[in-house]
Length: 230
Figure: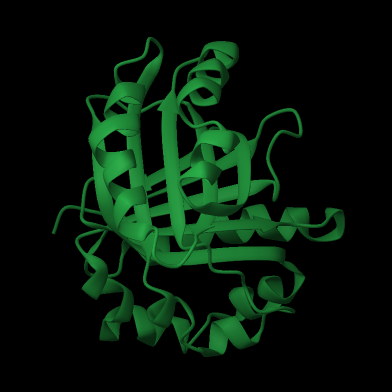
């Protein structure tokens, strides 16, 4: 279905073998509950790469009321006061990629258990035309394809994404910040989902419209948590 708010936080990361038990205990038992407990956070979903077709292995999507939540006092308070478990786990997380985004396009009537993520940048001067191509042509066409449940476009606020916090300082490397993030939700037929994306979101077509540094992954839903009704 369409994303539940006008803001989104997109995070890719890897948990090395020695940290996996701590990662799941932290992410399932504490971290996602903490995040959706912050005012303005609506839902969190974690996906895991399918058959090695995603890199990094884990993708987490938080849906927020709007982008102002990403610099709110409630969110920054948690980022600057990480829990003991967060301090223990965060240094082990590698290949971190994170964008605080505004939702530029979202359409769909249901959630999909499979997710294609496509992240990239757009050459200077091409953003306006690229946005029109996606929102007026490619994404509406994609959402109408068999097996596609929802399609979303998120654009990063690079300044907000780059704010230094205590939690961020504990990570071993600065996270990359992709400027454009396309998310395509589908049902159980992986081949159908991949074929639809290959046709309408091909690397060649997007590159000709100014896209650079494209990275695509295929993920399946692993864990979901919604905000409590207040």
